[in-house]
Each structure stands twice: as C-alpha cells, then as structure tokens.
Image 1: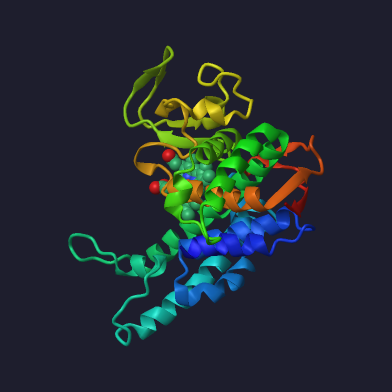
Image 2 (image 1 turned 45 degrees about the vertical axis):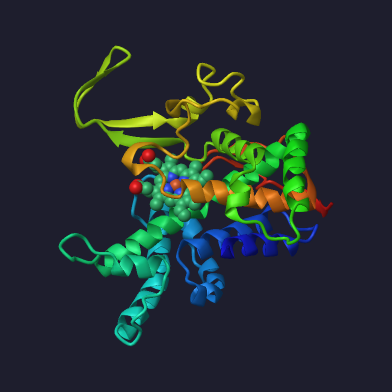
Length: 323
Ligand code: HEM
C-alpha cells in the first residue's frame, strides 16, 4: 500500500516540464522504498539517492580490469560506498540489539534474523551483499522498462487508447485516487502491455549458465563445465517464437505463452526474485500515468544503446502535460 501511495503521490507532483530524469527519480524512489527501507527509515531514501548504484550497474558487463580509470574499478568503488551506507545502519541495529525486542520489519531486519536449520544467522557481509544485490538488480531494470513503455505507448496510440480506457474504467469505479495491487493485477490489457514491453525492452540481454553434464544442442556437443550464454534478446525477437517480433502488440499475450519463448526474468531456481514486484510497479505507474497525462516523444527516431542495458540514447526525452 505504501507503494501505491508513493507512485501516486510522485506522479501527481510531476510538472509538464519534467522528462525522464524525473521518471527515473520516481522509479528509483519506488524501488528503494519497497526493497529494504522500513517505514521508520523512509526519509533515508533521499540519502540513498546520492549513493552511486548507477556506477556499479555500469560495471556489470565491463572488462574486469581493476585499475583506476577503468569502468570496473569505478564500479567496485561505487559498490564499496553503497555498502558503507548500509553498514552504518546495520551497525546501529546491532548496537541497539536487545533494547528493541521487535526487529524492524524490512529487508535488512529479515536478513539479520533469518536462520538455517542449525540456527546459523547470515554474517554481516552476507546481509550487506544481499541488500546490495537486490538494490542493484532492482535499480535500473524497472526504470528502464518503464521508459520503454512510455516510448512504445507514444509510438502505438491505439495501444495507449485501450490501456487508457481500461484504467479510466477502474479509476471511475472508485471514490478514491489510490489503487491496490489486487485491482491493478486484474487489469488484463494493462498487464499484457507490461509483458509486451518487457519482451521487447530486453534489458537483460542474456543469462549465463554452466553445463552440469555433457549435452547435445543442434548437432554440437557442449561439454560439462562449459559456460553457456542464453541470448534472451534472440529468444524474444525470433520470428519462430513470435509473429512480427519487432511489432509492439500486447494482443499476442491473449493466448498462453510457451515458457521457453519468454525468459525475460531468466528461468529455473535463479529466476528473478523481483519479477512480480517489477510487473506490478510498472503496471501501477502506467495506471496513474495513462489516466492523468499525455506525452509525446521529442526524438521519435532516437538511437538505442545496448550496454549495460538497452536504453534510448536521448534518455527518452518527452513533452508531457496533464490530461
Ligand atoms: C522488468 C524488470 C526486471 C527484469 C527484466 C529482471 C530480469 C532478471 C534476470 C534476467 C535475472 C537473471 C535470472 C537468471 O539467471 O535466470 C534477474 C535476477 C535477479 N533479479 Fe531481476 N529483473 C527485473 C527486476 C527486478 C527487481 C525489481 C528486483 C528486486 C527488487 C530484482 C531482483 C533480482 C535478483 C535479486 C536477482 C538474482 C536472483 C538469483 O540469482 O537468485 N529484479 N533479474
């Protein structure tokens, strides 16, 4: 519910001049608050924003040269600073341990208290690594997909119209501005728009696996122990898997989708843990955006850059005004 209020509140304060920079702030706030910050700690979000998770993200696919001046080195520095922020909070909680019997109900609290069958807790380093991992995995992903949604909706007005109609219908059926996650998840067309955007955005271009045994693939033997790259962008844009794959068509989600054809969140035991959260956040954002605003692309033919994630080179410059 806190999430609903934030999305709503932030968009309400969007001014027509604001572009994607503001969108990123809104979405980062969302991810930050939902991910690990407890109610009592919400005000700290602003402090986290000045931390450099973006610097870490750019190191994801950089050549691992730990030498000053290289992206990888910079990413490690940013990671260290990010973890220092959380260590301060962790140390404070450890110090207060015992004074407060009720652990704080957020991600850090959960990780500090979780134990295995033998009663072992995570070490501080493991707690911090888990938090940093979730922050980074959730930092740019949802933001970038949401910017792609704005892009495709501007390019496909017929889709935007259907999306708007569905969301206006929900809005008019309610006396209050806030919507719940249950209501959002029932918006069938909106959820198809979200999935179609995620398919085409391909922000995780690939996932990596290690072969646990020798296997044959299309006449080739992949030996045990080899790294295998699953090129998700290829899976999602292969005409064998999708008709007119580069066309933004939420209706293609009308039937059932073969799981092997849609792997934007990966697959198996390491599937993205944030997948439901991400889909919900994007849908909720689109609800408030489509019912309150109209927008246009400043550069409809903007180029795309692919590292570390596929993004529009102009950062999605838009003009936006209230409906
Ligand atoms: C549209 C948005 C997102 C996309 C497309 C996405 C995609 C992915 C992909 C492809 C993986 C690798 C899965 C694999 O190897 O099989 C992954 C892992 C992960 N994602 Fe996401 N993700 C998104 C949003 C999020 C969010 C919002 C969070 C958390 C708040 C998150 C947390 C994680 C974590 C923790 C992992 C590592 C899981 C593991 O290794 O066990 N993701 N994500």
